[in-house]
Length: 114
Picture (cartoon, rainbow, N blue to C red):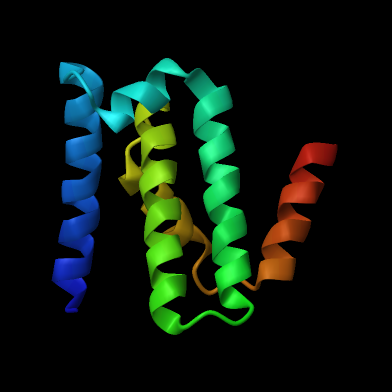
């Protein structure tokens, strides 16, 4: 999949989730999750993250991709619930790009101590 197509599908996914949030169509899974609040959304995010981990331990690559897609979908529902545009997440990832994980984590810890 080309870079542009990958970014496009993420944008389209978030647009659909936001549309479900705003239009609240009957029978919508997104609406059901949103109506359950952060308890329901968080439970699904945790469940899907666990399924990614389990698939990563020995399932075929297709299963890992399937579970990762489920995780991203549920994460986007959580972002939409808070009205956090995924571009803010992408910007944060961009800010961290080129910074080692341990270095970034230490900087966050130092900031909390201030």
